[in-house]
Length: 234
Image (cartoon, rainbow, N blue to C red):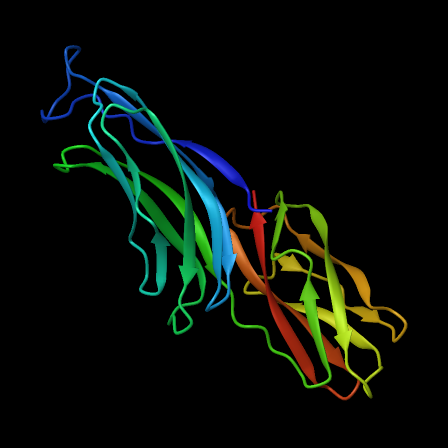
């Protein structure tokens, strides 16, 4: 499940002046949206995006994805009509099949009015995971693509090994991580096992941003399969 946040966006104390005073109109914009989405190339995720405002300015507002790398899109555009204070719109976030970036991407949802003299923005993260690597006779699947935990905690990720005859041997689970602050003790999955809980450890000094890692399964003859997992450290 994607974590959902309610972000209080920039509160603007004046609309048309360079400096604010007590007579200036104000407004506050709130966006409810996922804090983190993890997708592989060619995948998409649907969620509701809610735009809510409070204040003196009741003109039309539009929300778009800003600062996105090429290949990450959000549609449709979210519009809060003039005079209304709340709108919820189903949107689709898509990662193109041919995207040229991987890893954690910092995105901005920007709300602007018709003449662009009012704007507010909120940050969220899109993690572009590498496509899964498989073998002809075995692969792994994760129950969840994202693991939520606090720095210093350990948490299990549920891993299923799909074997195709004649392969019926054990595999060893491990991880590939860009940081030594995220680790895991290798786990042997016996031929009798299909689904196991694989423990992921973090240190208290782990960076508080989403970090993509890879879960790796290695057969006795050295062949490997991999799939991506986002560690969201809070």
